[in-house]
Image (cartoon, rainbow, N blue to C red; front, side, top):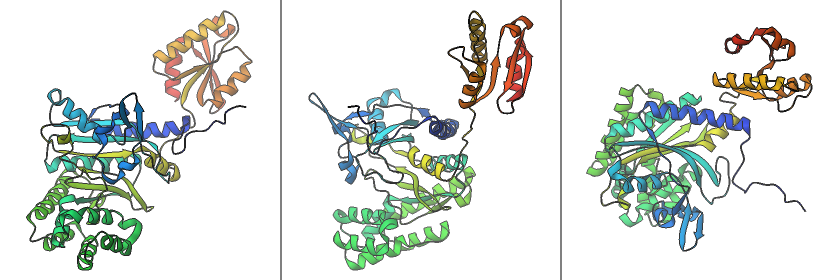
Length: 434
């Protein structure tokens, strides 16, 4: 009995049309990253379990664990912890600050939902070895420019700082050992609302008075300067939190200097970000129109490299999730999806004439054109049909009479028009007619 063909749940195949859109996304984003001076890096999909354990907080339960001999292994959860390992392992070989991007799959054993899969691709960008707010702003600028280049006109980056949330917990009188419950509750605000957050805070041991202070703070809204000013007022007696507010103000000033549009970023006191390794500025990109949840996120994590090394290296970064971007762009009918992606299809005649046709195909490819050839000399009409189905712009015929006359028959499959072109001018004719 034949095996029923199926992909593992939470993982999916991408056929050529889908891959063309995904390639557009990655090519667009990598082009922007390289203009900002980021360099490529690749790490293995499999890591020792000890490399990932204790680094990602509550979501450690989502790790895909493997066993090979005596080795305890884990599939890559994201590309951030592997970056920290690589930097610690190769610190003497890397010039700081190290600006890297990495494209690849990661794996999480979670329940599949809209935009969430067990296997997913991410494009990460990080700056290692500098604690300047200019680096934070540069990552945010990359996010804004990248989303706009993909066609997301209603995207906005929300900014906050982990030390502001820590200061909020201190000002509200929440004991340090309970502060994690505050972060986790705030991180769920969009999903469970104020009442849900209040209940979460109370369950975690936060007093009713402190819970109300937290809810008031995360509800602060207005212009960037108005929000920062009210933050300063609430956190007036907490120097570390005030320093964090000043850092956010500097990041916003740098973004303005970079020319990042003012309507593309704002301060969001309710932004917490779930991963435990963040230490400074955190951010998420959301879509205002149509309203969507987080498109991607990132932030500063200054202590992660230190878990693998004798010293910490300040780091800030982000991750573009390809699955979410791809799904949204399909849903919103965004991005180029050309029907025809092949420049030319070279037909075949039987016998010795095949050699000349295949030589023509080689010359066209050498000139930078994308070319398909027939694999057998079936009827020319059938070869034309195949060329059209494959999305070729032109079909080329080099038959006995054409060889004798020194021409190639060039059929435009988009219009049906056909003309004889001098053999040596065929490349120029195809390029001119594209």
